[in-house]
Length: 453
Ligand SMILES: Nc1ncnc2c1ncn2[C@@H]1O[C@H](COP(=O)(O)OP(=O)(O)O)[C@@H](O)[C@H]1O
Ligand SMILES: [Mg+2]
Image 1 (cartoon, rainbow, N blue to C red):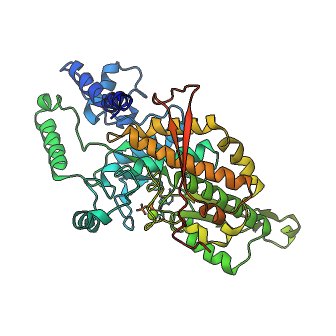
Image 2 (cartoon, helix red, strand yellow; image 1 turned 180 degrees about the vertical axis):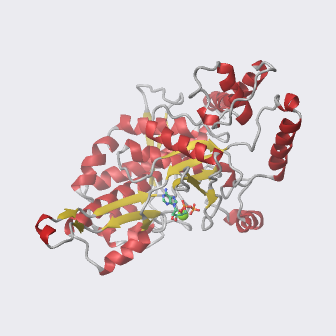
Image 3 (tube, rainbow, N blue to C red; image 1 turned 60 degrees about the vertical axis):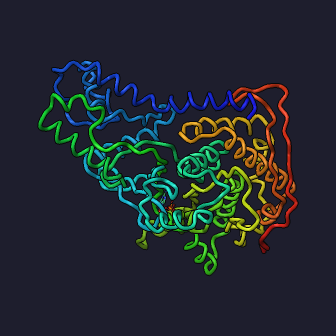
């Protein structure tokens, strides 16, 4: 290992310690509490310090002490913050997240106080590689056939980061096809916990009830919060597969078909950049509402209003992307959209104007890598060299995509281009930049494993 790599891994240690700082603060606050403080009324752990401002900060600290210090603060994004607050309050009031049963791992529909779904939460430790994956078939698979389990090109047990990373790429390029996704911490009785955590939580609750003086010293009451991705739930969408079959038989109005084509291209751009290995037509959703007229009576007919048709696309389930090397030939993980008729149409001016100026700008691409670094480094298993591999693949994908857009290729032609990695040869880490950055491109001239047409 070079000196440079060593110093990076030292940084890493500092960073992962940092991510636990919430715990340290929590322990500190509980230590400074005077023994005679009475309990604050039951409130959401993330609402500590809000409301009740007239009370001393000690009361807020007390609530943190009672529930554990949650870290779901998104001051840069009030909309996201609000939805998370709603979800936390709902959990506190007993509207608990529900497991999505068709899923391959532990994923949950998170509710608001009316029981309406507002988000999809995927905890890290319930991913296929996570310790608490609730699906026993996956567990057997991992145990009996480890070499065939999972995708060897992906970083194991970081699916939640891939979900949030897809949202970073989507927002940065203004594609607006990924429902907003970030990393949060949530606790709920309906999540999969091991017996020890459950027993600990019950014992602490009992002690707190019977011996409040002892219970007061507990670091946290209740089940431990889980780290995972939280994606906004989108309403009135159905699997793309459902609508695409329908559109085969009924012609869409031209303007709607054009809009769908543009949204499809955004999905292609997203998937290609993040090298999504799991984009089946069940992992993107379409919302379609045909034009409707209002004002039904005959007298009103002259005054009928026609609502424009609605068509939108949502790219969900982005947890199997950002590989650190290109997938092997024998398991190519094709983009399933490549078989759709829409993929044979050359990229439109709309998508070229939207993304080409940014993707051709090296500073923009470096900024994107930096934003992903900020996100990915928060994982305890973060490894700088693996991350560099992920970025080399992504830069290679961006290089191909840029060329394809310039040459007015179609998505089918794009996926037939030889894959390339672009390695950044530079010391330093994170957002630091030098004048003398160099890049090494390596092309693979392998013929694609699949015939795409
Ligand atoms: N953000 C979302 N908005 C609306 N529905 C969603 C969303 N995410 C997931 N779903 C629904 O939940 C199902 C399973 O979610 P998915 O993310 O595909 O999980 P898995 O990784 O288990 O396949 C999807 O097929 C879709 O119907
Ligand atoms: Mg899925």
